[in-house]
Image 1 (tube, helix red, strand yellow):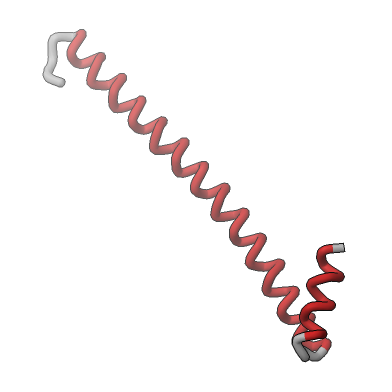
Image 2 (cartoon, one colour):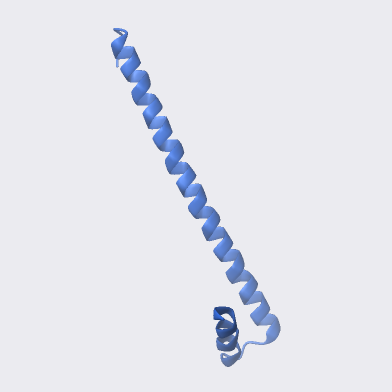
Length: 69
């Protein structure tokens, strides 16, 4: 329903059918890229947290073994 409303709004704005198709495709592409970006940001956060945890664990192991932190 939202897509039909979007098409209607574009028609009302005077955009021809080819232009509407292009706009809708670009909007779909943009939504897919935004979702992929969100996924990549979440993965990046997870990897950074894992790296920090590994670094803390490594420091703790060195300290426990009598080495430097």
